[in-house]
Image 1: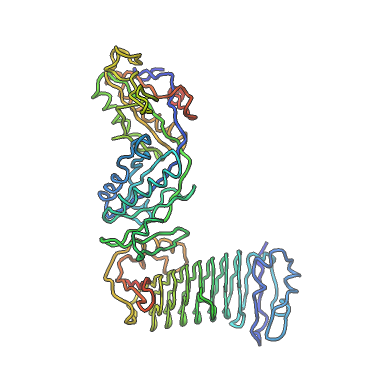
Image 2 (image 1 turned 90 degrees about the horizontal axis):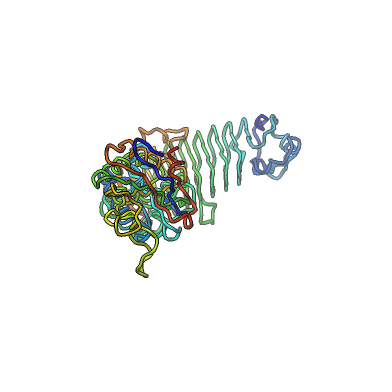
Length: 270
Length: 298
């Protein structure tokens, strides 16, 4: 059985809600039923086969080809299976994802992996603001799983993050790790202003010295035993994070945000 | 059955169901991992009064440990899960947490999860933090030499305790030399420990005593100085008897350890003063696991 492949026919005029097209919801449907599903696009509802040409039948391996940044909510609440996106993804990619894996060859928009619970998300390009964050008004962002971004991420990555790993090979925008409750964000590139703003607990693991707020206090240089274990857990990833030459256990530790409870830490490679 | 002049008794070792766990201690170098492991497994020879039986299982290469440092695997056995968990936690807190540069990891992935660093974290007084890595939770506890890293839980599994054999020799030095050789080989077998000092017991016991307060007393039938004073199991030429007790995760593990140990003793043979191999049992009424010496050596 070959993967269910949806190829976008034309660039959409309106944003499209892709949330019905997730593996666990398609499990019991025949290809004809999937073709007849309707997707919200602006104020209209469009059939799947109006928007996409459909090939293959294995709905547990979904491929979206010719993908566009107006395709929102791809992989929303995904509970098993895999989605491969050839092109860009819109906002709310992998929102509330519970299990499975999603790979994107291009960029992803705002609120990617917001409130993600488990699973694996890999983005080859750049990502917008609020990666792994909480939805506006909510208090809990990403609660588990791993996100790998090979490009750069926007502002407020990991806002209100509770658990899990966000791995960024490129740069992170301002307010990275803001209001974090726990979890790990690793950034190989540069970080913006207000790093870890109001973070309570959690770890920001950096390859480059950041511009830190006055509410982060230097705790000195240390060799931390958990870092080799953390890096070993990345060894299966298709990423620079898997390269043991990039790993380290000697860090400068900064505790903060002292204007909050101050149990968080920024660890900078030395 | 006679092997190299050593007579193998047609008897069996009687063993009991126990609960077991394993932990891995790592440190900056092998010396400090070993110091920590020796402290943790101290006073753990017998459940009769120690609360558990424990010993070093083996030394681990850095490539075998979770944090890539030299390590030591230790195992503990107790009659019940609750007692085992309490012993493990107390020993981890007083002997490993306190030991310079140490870290503590689970040695059994499956089984019932029992606390390892889960409650030790409170020593951190609120400064402790945890990391969930590949589904395993680790606690980072700030201590004066840096940070103590401990996995939250380890596995508790069903196991067997009390496998044993007795080495009957013409002299005390010969009995000890045979036991030392046996222990050296038996320590290469995974999943077993020999919890007594150096792996060898010189005071094997029988069930009961003439004193009402004691549940166990000296095994007078195997005491060479009582050959003429009690109903002895010893022939006139036997001057010393030593026992090796084995706790293991499975019957097969104990079988293997006993076979290796007895074979090593028999290799020394009668010319080195080894006369007989026997085993301790209680008539088969108390323990459900019977290790028949002649079957093991067949």
